[in-house]
Image 1 (cartoon, rainbow, N blue to C red):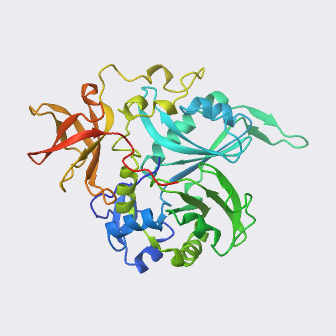
Image 2: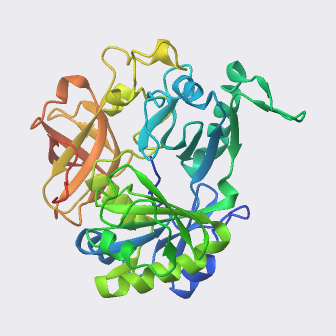
Length: 393
């Protein structure tokens, strides 16, 4: 879940900025239009920011992401129906990766769900899919709408309600091996519900930042340990400053979308619009484990199985310095097209080209020799296991 792609730098008249625009400009960030938002693509260099996250820590502004609250006595049952995973069994304090599927079985978006209370959940989705996610979640409420009379007044409430609260919040990500030490030293964080050092991966803690609510989740999109901090939009600039101050002795740097993209690629994490789309079934993208196919009913269940012979997602590793990019063909020794690259780069950590690609199932065995068609030149490569990089624990 979560977005990283760093497209060509440009601007559109309709682009929005996050609450941290002035902070980014003061740091000399280059901006790029992404999903209708002007986002920092880099501050210094892509490589420096990438290596900082692998070696120490990086601070990302991901306030463009979309947030939805799901509330009501039927919230858990509703999410079991609306999403591919089984969310009703989550315990309070946990987070879970899941998929929002279309009736066709294709992927509308990948999301992270947080259980805040028995009848209260938070969903974070990709910014570019905010409208599609809002529409799908809204439509799927209908079977669960009912009115409950509240004692001693005439107020009623529905069995489940969905609210788009994206504009209320900002989201900061601190990623890297020094992230835990940095977060523990941020000035202004109080009332932490889970002691420092005891937070688990894919779990969250409540806290206060300067007296206002803060959700601190141990999640991320870089392959490193890290935290994502959800705060009121108006509190984001002060929190950004506090994170950089706490992280300075630890080597933290502000990092942009370019580094985020190479980090998530090394970690084998899919990106919507590249590895995931409405034309992609979960099993094709290696996400069959995310689907609770034994659930009685959920949207997309009848169509979720990939067609026989459908292309599947694999990793590719090559030698040299010429990397395949999204859209480049993957071919065999005879030049027969086997598939297409969805994401590719020269890996800053590994020092050689890596890519993810959808290819014919006949050629997906690890070690299979293939070629990347890089502008007419056939670059030798081999099918590789994902992820390309695993952090040391």
